[in-house]
Length: 248
Image 1: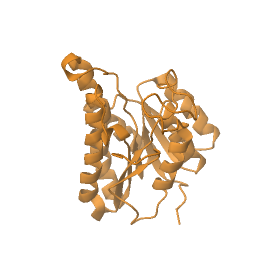
Image 2: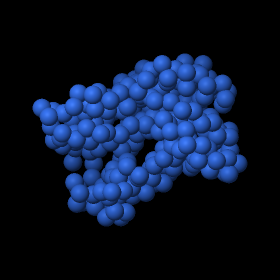
Image 3: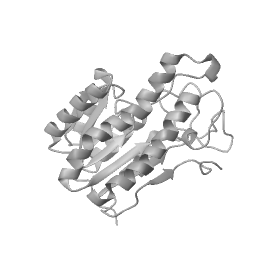
Image 4: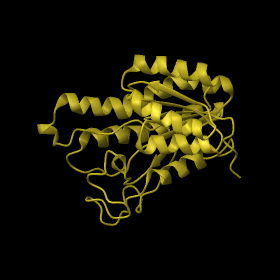
């Protein structure tokens, strides 16, 4: 049976809006103490206020996860405020480069890799010593179906998310003996501030007629379920909310 999240110390990246905001709020409602990070101080302040309204501790930390130095500082501040980290949700990411490789802008391509892959690595790298010292934990990486089945014109995002999936599997083999489980969530199409100009709730997205656009809260529910699994639960796995399996 799933365990309670009451008193658990959770760090959610990209927690200022969309999926990250919903995950942070869902964890707070289960009694967790939550640190959230994003680049926008205003967004973080608004989410922190919502978390506090749930009666939980909220620690807002401004950070660009693509900057390794900022991540090291941010993790140190989160650990100091929470007293440790039991669950890391690597949610920050996104993509702004939508062009064939031959026409792509190198700065945007590299920035996408930094936000999605470097950020996931850096946050994990600096959280791991705390989890190992604490005797275990959960790392949940928010991936994408594009990391399992690619399309032309989004090489930076697809490459980054494919690497996040490989990173998830590799890391799970390295840390299981420390009581740390590492898994990926594939949300499928989700209605967020970044997609509301293209997606309609409960309708199909433009690129996949068989799919259904869902709310971030559905991703949050799966995240809470994974975070609350007892020690010895699944690791190195991809849990998908898409209507067809990755690669299918």
